[in-house]
Every structure is written in C-alpha cells, then in structure tokens.
Length: 129
Image 1 (cartoon, helix red, strand yellow):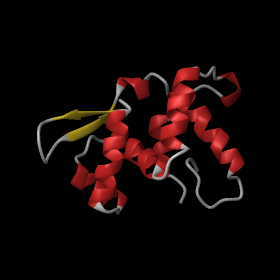
Image 2 (cartoon, helix red, strand yellow):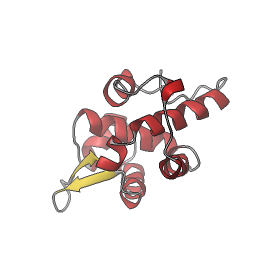
Image 3 (cartoon, rainbow, N blue to C red):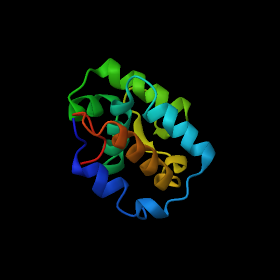
Image 4 (cartoon, one colour):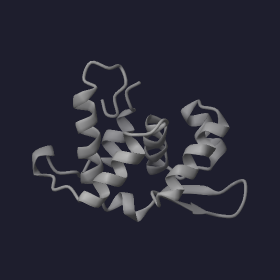
C-alpha cells in the first residue's frame, strides 16, 4: 500500500535531494531496525506520517489508519521505546507527536526508506508515492 502524499508532502518536503544526503550512521542503524527490519514497519511509518499532520491519540490513529487498536498500541510502544515519538498527557487520551530525534534526522530516514524501496521496486508496498 503506497503511503499517502501526506508523508511526502509533510515529512520529507524539506529534505535535500537524495544524492546530497549525508547519513548519520547511528540514526541509519536505528531507522533501519524500526522502519525496515521488523514486522510492522509500514504501520510505524504510517503512524509517523499521521501524527506529523496532526497529533492524535491511539483511538484516533486506529480510525484514521483503519487498523486494529491493539496493533496501533503495540507500534506506539515500539516507537516510544526508540524515542521516535513523544507523548503528551496521562492516560487514555494521550496525544502523540514526532520526537525531535526523528525531526532532526529526516534526511537519514528518507535515505533509509528510499534504499528499501529500491530493493522492493516490484513490490506493491511502498513507503512513498
């Protein structure tokens, strides 16, 4: 399933051209493990795209992404444990935001995703349209 144009227009709109990106090795390893190497990688990227547009809680994410609440909840935990999203509030209605860690390393994330897409070129699943 290709990602909505939201991902391309909101998250990666200010990323320099692919060839000019200098990767941070530590962040490349983190992003590779979270967004390319584990089950749920597409879900996690979709969550990042959605909360970049507008902070949401788990239920709102579940509805927007048309996914099971527990699936969203699990992937939120993965993103939080890797410091890629921030939580505001206490309890059921907590809102989630992209963390400064992800915001300050978008070029590296973009490059990691593009490399995966090159390998999956014939696949139906793509991160970015």
